[in-house]
Image 1 (tube, one colour):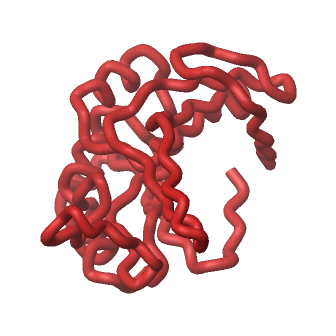
Image 2 (cartoon, helix red, strand yellow):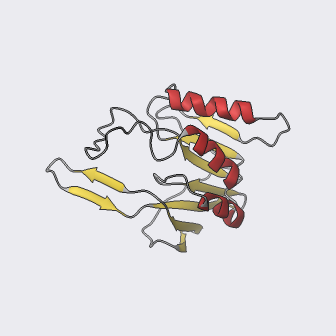
Image 3 (cartoon, helix red, strand yellow):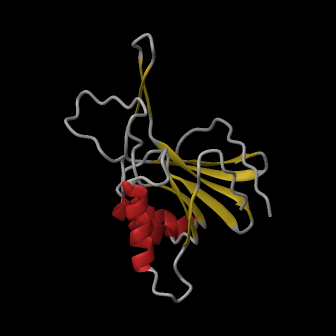
Length: 169
């Protein structure tokens, strides 16, 4: 079954109906920051989404969140089935954090992303937040997933997409 999603504006902490689909907007733990070419700084609240895209398809998009125990609660309450799990921060993408000495990964590391996937109860993990699908953090996440798979059919499917690739759920 193909699923198409269009997001509309909504406030945090609510469930809204958008295009006939239920969208839960949850607060997340991180910050959002961008610098415009004219030097203007932009920042906004951290939010993520759990989208009920079809009766058995609930998609978790964490925004750019940090690892939080709330993910376990969201798994129990909302039971997402598919998750876009960030495993790295793309290097050389214009990311500028002058107030930080070192900023290698994004808001969540590969081991944290895998544990969060377990807490969320995801059946399908789509690795995200990278430019090069062969980068070290993506490879590390795949190794963690492979090592954790006990061969009992309970491990989530893991997908790493190439730029421009389209995945139909």
